[in-house]
Amino acid sequence: MYEFSTLWWSLNTVSGHLMKNAHTLVNYGALHRKGLPISSSIAESAVNQVVTLNAAVSVAYICVVLSSE
Image: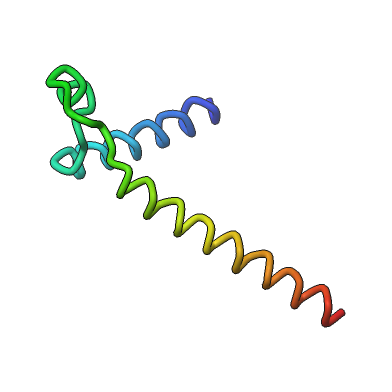
């Protein structure tokens, strides 16, 4: 019974989140059918820069922590 109630809570939480944010979801299928790009290289480049920066900061932090031990 515990597993069912946990699953039910999780599904209910996800469903609520999707309903509240439905207006922000992108219909990628419609974009694809119209022949429009799904993402742009500008957006991908921005994401890559953020990921790279976060990785560099994490590595620097780890190095500082390890060197102080």
